[in-house]
Image (cartoon, rainbow, N blue to C red; front, side):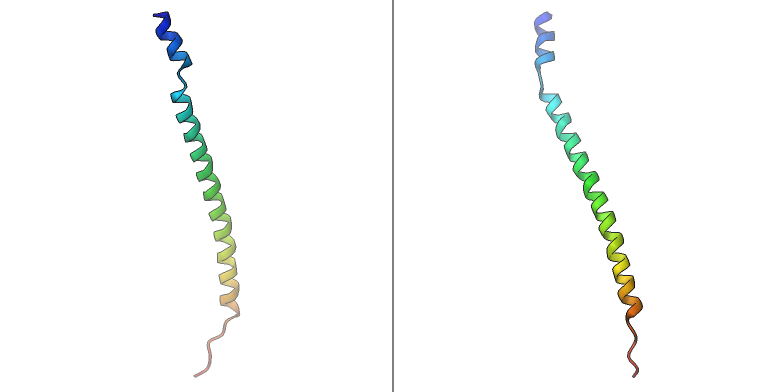
Length: 58
């Protein structure tokens, strides 16, 4: 029984999976934040350009 417990404590397979999961979650949060910030700036730029455009007279 003690051998089984020692092997269980030394086994790091689950720990590496948790670490990979945390890294993926962190990368996803950074990507979402970047897209949100850039998307806001791009929308403001398009609105600025649209406000400067005029319809040509026919």
